Length: 53
Image (cartoon, rainbow, N blue to C red; front, top):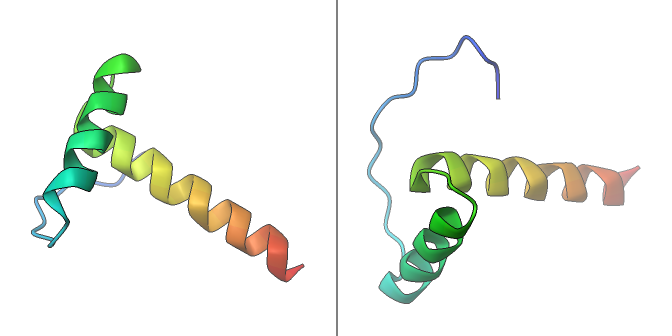
């Protein structure tokens, strides 16, 4: 994610059980849920890009 990007509210559909797990992990890491999700998505994208190379 670009550092100068403005974070905007979004609405997505997600299973409540997955959201609870993500929230628990975010708390463990001292992050907000939004920040944790952004980091998780970035990590997933990086892994997928490495597979393609």
